[in-house]
Amino acid sequence: MTWTDGARFEREAATEGRTGAVVNGEFIAIEPGANVVDTCLALAADAGYGKFRVFLNNDEYEPEDIPETLQEGDILKVTAYDVAG
Image (cartoon, rainbow, N blue to C red; front, side, top):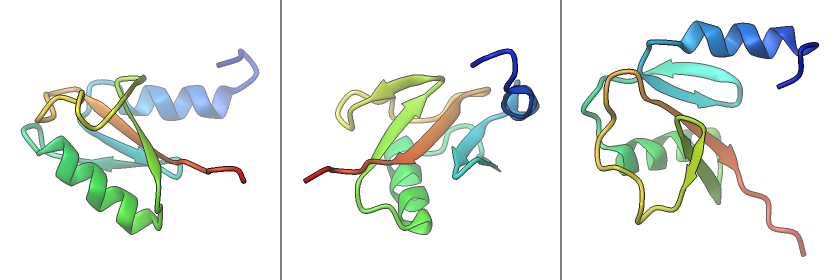
């Protein structure tokens, strides 16, 4: 983040202390205890992503390494994964 990116800072501050996901820049509230893999698959399908990347609390995870359930305050981020070629 840069200091000049105030809109991004405001969006990130608005999610602080909340549990949910960010997809296409929009925050979606999700109940703590939700299954992470099922939630990511549903979010990616709704966004039209064939391939996607998953971040949990700003750390990227591979499917086999991600925790099973969301905890209070966790933020998922699902982004498109573009394959060049």
